[in-house]
Image (cartoon, rainbow, N blue to C red):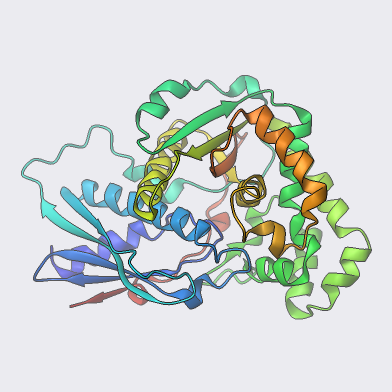
Length: 359
């Protein structure tokens, strides 16, 4: 693989899903060993609720699936290795993982998901009803080694409202809320950020976010004027539109390596379903809140929630979801839409030449 082809690979692989709309990884390609080294840049992951490494592993697993899918399209196989020794989300980590590439003798392109990569959008609009979902979960779970997937259709209204409440929790903490809102992009030429068209809100509502970006003090003013209740109302409408979601849970006692592989396999599942016309809205916050009994640092502390008031709700939802003491990997609203999103709603990505170096 030469420099030009390695650059083409990264140009496609960079569109991976992110647990919090950040890109904390960079690539180095060693020409002699034909290996992509992936470096972790802590400053790029500086979000209020990321630092228990939960979203970092989600993002890394997604990246690796996109990279692997792209390599297959170019007729290369990959050999993956991890190095999580002494890893801290607060510090840079060179070569947190690496992928050695090997040219395949025959290019088999029968089930390629490559065409889905750049067309897979996080779609936050209302979805069609649950009757449009025709998914068999058993084949999905056969592809998962370290986790389990469950599909809920016509889900309980209380659970859907619970997820909507979690997604609205950004209004409980100024530091959390402004951090997330600052990641919204209003400049069409921006190389990073989540375009406001992807938010599933009216332009007037998006303009409130733009105002907060300019003047953080507006956050508390809008909060006391009922902004969280407005967002909660909007989120409930979205969750109740399809009444359906996927929930992935980790197996017990997994290492970081195994969790990352689990996230890679989960991303493969999402790409497979995207190819069939399904769209998703991840609810990272719902997963974080549901995991409150298992983790000491998460969205609950970041959003300054009161755990005592949440404990009963969490227990009730975990019982409904039938997940016992399992750690929740991700929650994703799922459905189909009337029309595809425009490309202006695709999450912005760093330019390729800022992501890759050669050795």
